[in-house]
Image (cartoon, rainbow, N blue to C red):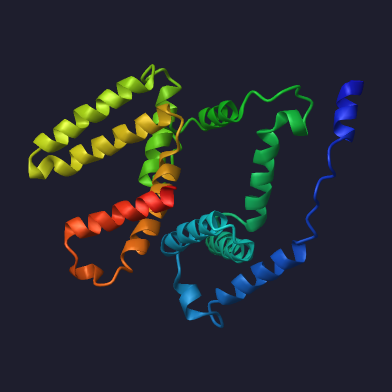
Length: 267
């Protein structure tokens, strides 16, 4: 290693080390096994399947994100525990069915992280890039060779649209700049307006897909943008709905309140 590299490493702060969590993980695994015990376990836990638990897994992931959004570290610790339970729950059902074990899950993610960081865990001078490594992994499986392979169906629709578009763009199937995507939005908007009622849902879907594409080319995360828009709407609506007699106000009066709150909160 060059002297400059050694000096740079010497100036880095020490790596924060996690306390040993193996006993806590073992306890959680044992609790889950007991809850799933065919004779003495919890009736509700015994009845669950991968399919019935999946919605809870997604919900817990969203609750983790919500705690982060609120910068609530106590809630984050609690929600991460709930999410960890989901991993252990799925692994316990997999053991019972003879599919895989929790140890295999953990070794698998450890191997994957080392494989995707060759410049950290091997003698490689640099990484070819996360996406390049992932693409090579997908190709090695040889089940689905499409550039779109592996984009999870269960992702939120906006996020999945953005991922599909990014994958397609890597093959050269993309607008050269945002102006093309903007024109596509106008085209799709017109098609929504002209569509028969039976076709309107499909055309609206095309419009939303085009908006996501425009956001991607502007380097904006559409999911995050919409999340912030939701928060802004909620903040402003909560402010106007407390006005005396709000429910009985005319739309023009409510619009005036909205404009006032918007100006006040934007100042």
